[in-house]
Image (cartoon, rainbow, N blue to C red; front, side, top):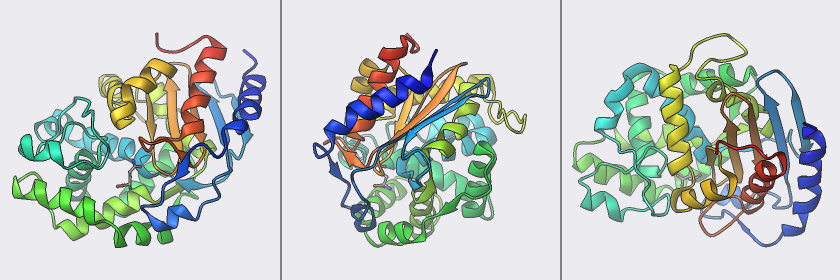
Length: 304
Ligand code: GLN
């Protein structure tokens, strides 16, 4: 398969969509990003790498980090996390509060903000230095020690975190948050502000593609069964109230972030990350969604 030609063709074709989406502006530092950027990076399990466009430019991974935090918590407490977080699509926007009240403070899934906050809360209980531990974990996954937090984005989100604070306090009132809310929001805003490129992310998701085994270090990060479950959650919940549509169009597990990145993979085969900052109305990268649909269609391969 000539992946380089495939991704270059997609890169050329989709630039025509610039201007149709809108950069996230509820986090002021994200609004400053140049919208006209588009990168694609592909890593195969047999060690081939391909890239197009702005694949090496670092961006804010935002909710893609929710996969990393869930992996960190799952490897320590396993199924226990499912007592506090559900595993069903929410059908609601990522930052919605309404369902939480009806469902007694138990978030629908770990990829909406409420669920990710519970996961990060457990992570804080497990690690004495959670912010260092998250960076170390992500660096190990992509085999790159040059991964850092974008402090300006972390500060900007922290200063505009009223809704996430509301989610955390509501859940705390139901007994589903154990740590101090300020500490929780600080760690959460940092994990969302990790700065990575498409190249880094496509490498970091190879362990999921590889049944939980990190191909760089040889470490079994998750069991095969845990990796399967994480992928299933990405497929069903990775794009909030657009998860069904992404599965329908691209047919692979993926996770988006409001920085405009989407990490996706085909189990046993390859990991692909696309990034373009303009979002559609569900908060997912408009060009990124299109790119992944084109990719799986062009190569004639998906999980279905
Ligand atoms: N940091 C963002 C928030 O909490 C993450 C949301 C996202 O990427 N969908 O609002």
